[in-house]
Image (cartoon, rainbow over all chains, first blue to last red; front, side, top):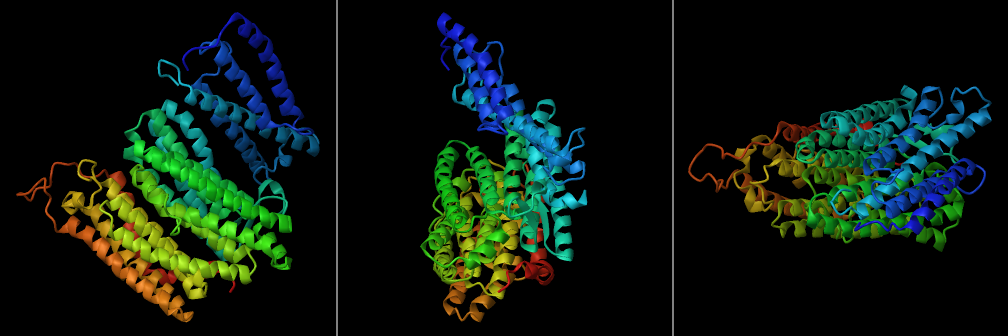
Length: 145
Length: 491
């Protein structure tokens, strides 16, 4: 990417926008169980906020998700998903049978929490991958990705 | 944990694919070790699961505890389990073989290579094990996307060739998905076993015909059946050696497995399937002849091997289109034997030092002196593709021939024999260079040229596959009676 699009107006607008995007991402994630939404959509919104920060404030913006951290997210998200699957496998069910997780709640709630954990994994993974795609398509002038 | 073996086969490489990029930041060696450990444990699980399935009957594993047809199930039966063992075995050998290649890359790219390789393995194992046609599509895409990235990592020409493959492969996957959509619309189920039952009750009609055509064409493109093989030569030729070795060995076989599964285990026997098989048989005859003739015309060894694959896929398609017990046994034995032989051939060529092989056939002069072991394995595998006893290729062709004669298909029998002759011509052309033409770089001496011999990491997998080709041939009776015979559909 040649340079950032930073200007005082954009900067102020971004500062205002980003926290609400995060809040909306959290809402879409948590409410995805009963309404349209879910981990993928939440991840896209989260990634959009991070890419917006990159476009307006550049590489050194705070908060920032570096490419390296994006790779970590892209791996950690699916690992969280699989980890919940393996956890249910270890507590006596089949893979991804997260109703059997040993949590002090009734089985319906356990299943909801399990779904939420899986969706959170999807969100983290999607965020990481989308930020990575942006970084790969728009490398910085000094060649760093 | 033993009751979870079916899922662990897929889970081992998948989990490792996600962990490898993180581990590689700390230690590249640990990441490599993890890759090999994951493929090896997948192999162990696959063998154990297949043994259980052979002893106690098909093994159904319900993901998330949801019973089919609502949930996704994995099925280890002799056919799918056997396929998983082949894929996992090749993956284990190639993960060792890839060592020198990965070490030549930066740690970031090396980790990406290993991660993609593990994802490709995951996808192929998933196709072999899933009992759900939509899940099969997902794994088809997982393996294809990983394969595109791996094939494209061979340099600029590889990128162009792979881009074309990506376009054609995406069309193929869409065909498959569309065909599946028709079947889903007719029955409302995606589970293979349930679909087979429900489709019996559906009267034959245009929707079913279109669905079958789309499924078969989609899978045929993925298999690179002649005349849909156009994407394959370039894509395989320019890829890094370990990638070509793995993909050429198993990827089209797994698609062939999917076609067998769909044609014989899901779709109801009837006019539509009969017609599809009749068309496939002529396509196969064309493929066997065209593949052999085009292989003759190549000057690049790797391209020659790719065109020989087009011909060999023709044998497999021929076997399943004849469709009697002997022909299907031959097709399945050929899947096993050709996977080992083609992996061995590409592995042996790829193990030669870069400066000595321009991949031109002439560049192989004196290769037997520089890499005697790899070239010995190459010779065994080549003889197997020609079909000389006691290698695997002889026996699979024998079964195919018997199947063709049982079905009174004399033309197919003639085609089998003619193409074997052509195979002999193009392979002996290479073997002549390898063994009898002196090395031009060391014209007057008997000492080996200074080019370093291939690393043991590359030689051991190639030798293992060469030995496997011989063993499959020698013990084909055991293999057929203990596994393949149980993998056949009820005819």
